[in-house]
Image (cartoon, one colour):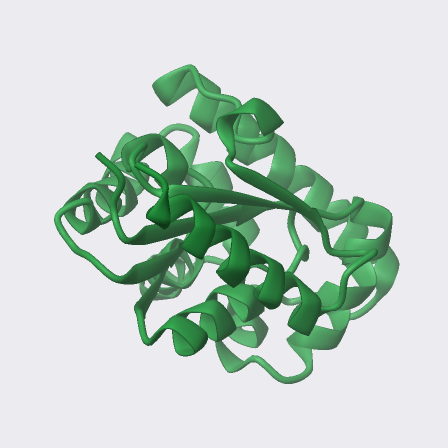
Amino acid sequence: MKKEIITINGGLGSGKSSTADLVAKELGFKRFSSGDFFRQVGLELGLSINEINIRAETDKKIDEMTDQKLRDLNNKNKIVIDSRTAYHWIPESFKVYLNLPPEIAKDRILSSLKVEKLRQQSENMSSAEEVYKKITERFESEQKRYWDLYKINNTDKKNYDLIIDTNKNNLEQVVKIIVLEYKKWIAEN
């Protein structure tokens, strides 16, 4: 049975957070970001986002906390979730993947570091080259963890109901596409 839940995943810097914020606002839904939750856990432990990812490779409790939070959201309705694994934990959700090559993502991430306080605190990077190196390391760490823990590949497009290229579509277009396709999806039985 379909749930009134939208799960949004995508490459690093693809616009998951901004998209989730606006889709939730457009639909009057609540929003949850597992990335923000994960960053907060890292800050509480005195670790950057890359350091918490590396620690999570050996400390399963870190992912278990985040994943339990996601599993608990399966009981909610009218929520947009920005997460790498929510599609897996909430298979009845409308599953969206935002696609963006890391070569383009690095510049977007660098720009967002200038305005997002939580990101500034958890991601200490100052150049596009440094961003690219760290997002590549983070991506590899996450893929290894998700495979080791759950045998999932969260970048496999067959897991999603909708795939959007965020290089070819601006934020407003992405939000419009998601809202339109979600409404069609939820109306189908």
